[in-house]
Amino acid sequence: MLKDFFMGLSQNQFLNNTAKKYGLKMGAQTVVAGTNIEEAIKSIKELNAHGISCTVDNLGEFVFKEEEAEEAREQILKVIEAIHKHQVDAHISLKPTQLGLDIDYHFCLNNVKEIVDRANNYGIFVNIDMEDYSHLQPTFDLLEDLSLEYENVGTVIQSYFRQAQEYLEKYRNFRIRIVKGAYKESEEIAYPDKKDIDANFIKITEWHLKNGKFTSIATHDHQIINHIKEFVKKNNIPKEKFEFQMLYGFRKDLQLKLASEGYNFCTYVPFGKDWYGYFMRRLAERPQNLNLVAKQVFNKKTNTVLGVAAGAFLLGRMTKKTKKRR
Ligand SMILES: Cc1cc2nc3c(=O)[nH]c(=O)nc-3n(C[C@H](O)[C@H](O)[C@H](O)COP(=O)(O)OP(=O)(O)OC[C@H]3O[C@@H](n4cnc5c(N)ncnc54)[C@H](O)[C@@H]3O)c2cc1C
Image 1: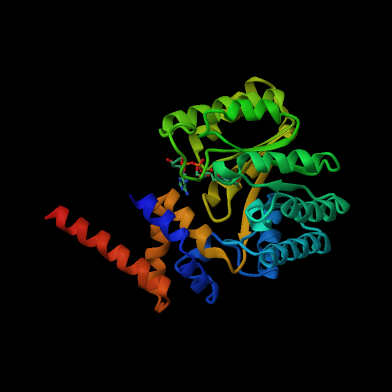
Image 2: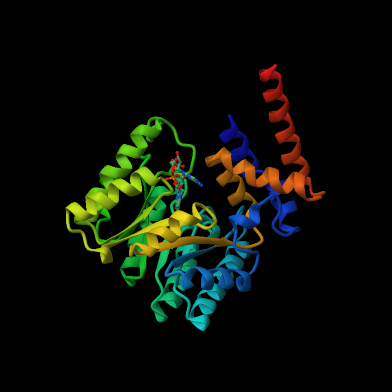
């Protein structure tokens, strides 16, 4: 229920637009690395100092007009220039819908191509993030079209899909990020149960480590991470063939520990004015993150619509809990 609530909030365009007018609120600053490129570069430098590389996501939501997609493209080009100028260890993560996939496939392809081309000039990799099932095939199509000219591009495979192994085998020659999957999908195409999603994550990760190009293992799940650590040791998989990835602000201790153990580690660094949808999806994924919100809403005076919405919601939850205890 909580998941649906936050997923609902993430899709609320009014709240999204309202949030854009304010800086990071409600604890979002702990999981979003600022609202502008300078702040993001500062965070990247801090992570690089710990031997952690970064993948940078210039957040963007609700792109329906060509001008909006073009603006997103220009912003991402600026991020590439900043990565190059500051010589930080970072690459790009982008979402096809942000670059116009819902408007027109070829329009989107041209936008992404311009980004991949600029990144290629500087030897920077571009990851195409995977969104929901309706965008899955067009995203693989983008990858295939781009790969006709460029090698610095890869994508994501979500282990909740029943066909994940099939996708993986088809795209084995690309650098692939493996995740559990963040969207609400139907049972026909995706496993509904966590245990099946986790088992499939392990199965496809092991397969890709043995047969694929380069694997980014993107999870905060220590049990899966420990399992993979044992697997690579047993199978003599060299450390150059894979990395662990986590989101900015999550499990910082574990991020530092893995990097200090000599594993390649990459932090996903989201930033930008469009932080609201991303933040709500993180709350949907792990309601324990509500602690972040609670601290901010009750410790600071925040009079935004968002603050009031979250406060009212938390109050509702607390009242329910109190009732139960009685
Ligand atoms: C780098 C990165 C990139 C991603 N890119 C995409 C993408 O392109 N497309 C997409 O659909 N999804 C993407 N995701 C999101 C992903 O699909 C999952 O929704 C998300 O990572 C949550 O799943 P999990 O694997 O972290 O483990 P979960 O199933 O959420 O957690 C498993 C266990 O790990 C532990 N744990 C998890 N989080 C914490 C925490 N913060 N603190 C302490 N313990 C914790 C708990 O024991 C928990 O039970 C990405 C995730 C990452 C990390």
